Length: 308
Image (cartoon, rainbow, N blue to C red; front, side, top):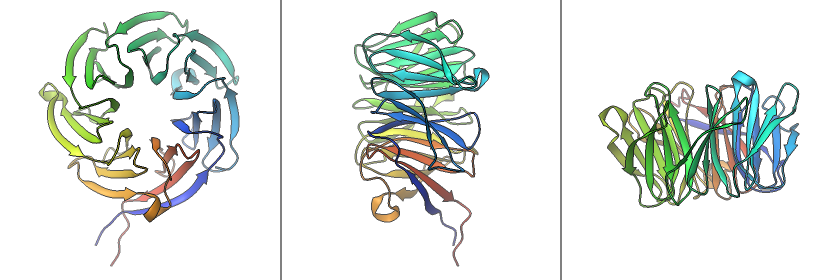
């Protein structure tokens, strides 16, 4: 009988406060993390206990984004703005003030930086000049998360007013407003084949939206006990994981949307507090999870494990 085997490979405990974000690096075995202590740390999965501090900012960091084209790390410093770190020279290339508010998410595409802010604004900037291209004021409540679909020439933003808004990727015009959840939308992700938009909310529901059918709701799942903070797909697109304020990580089949595995403290020595972010790496298919417990866990998820 086939089943999934989950093994905890290691625990990284280098931060002095909640870890809010983890992000891929320039190599498959390298990643970055940051959180409540304002430290931006660089880690190597071949030597996970030998992290080093790349930078430190005075306030907490909710969002990091690595941009391969410029080999740059974009850092969102809450109540200040974004900082562009040149990873080759290992120094700050530039920064821009975005107002006295939180920066919840950052994405970069074609030299354009997309930032979602706590004041309900979406800022689009040029990464080379740091000039503002567009500011979208869509809500009086926080813009929490961003997902970009180049195939569909759209990007989706989840808000604390319970809605997801779909925008044209080229002229930034609003195309659609979806009354998606009962309360704040914390995460949105397009499936690797771009057919679906997945959303997770503070209402603990996972929702699947059919992009080709004008974002019609395909499925609504009570996925966790408390808020879904983040979700991410595997490299092969066959699976995805959600993480939650309920301290668990859940593994799902990306075709059927069936739950396959629960990773938690009781069964797998998982996190003891809210799991804030997950990152599924291409390095040995390892999954990383970041938590309020100040740690980052490294997981090996074996889908080919068999037991007679």
